Length: 212
Image (cartoon, rainbow, N blue to C red; front, side):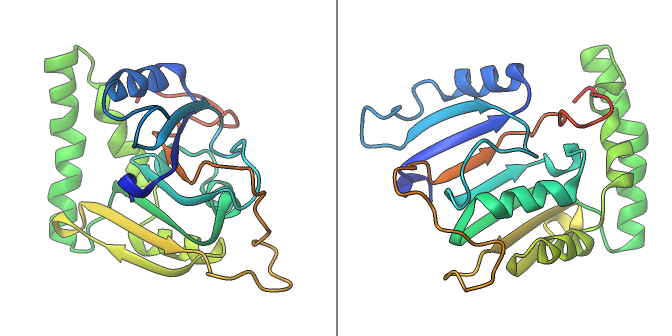
């Protein structure tokens, strides 16, 4: 979808993440001055995306759903800004359905990952929080249920690496129907058609921010 995008917006709650994205994106694609899409970045809360209803054709996020203070509210907000026929794609750490694989995986996150953090960053919590956040995070099938609850259709789940990772793809109905509270007409002048939730940051409504 990237080569066909007219414009791409990257959203994150924290300025350091946006600065990293901007630096890495320098020279990767023209910013409205060439054949590629217009790329812009905005600092905002993923629970309150600063865009009108039905503004985007695609919304994507990688390793960010766990960071939302309220996943239901976040998915509802994604659903709000997607146009009819739009698609949401999420990549996140998963919970392997096989108990043996899950045991080995969680032991690795609990014991080995903090060791790497201590060796390479001098701080075991650099990535050690992943285990704690994943324990509270719903399984792939539970996330699929939340997507359907938010109004998405054709929800698909992929479990690469035996379910260590989880990919969710969810669509919005292609045509608005009378009485559907989720679907409203998009304002014609709004150009951005792809939204990338960089990592979501820690939402402004979260009780505390944690190291990522």
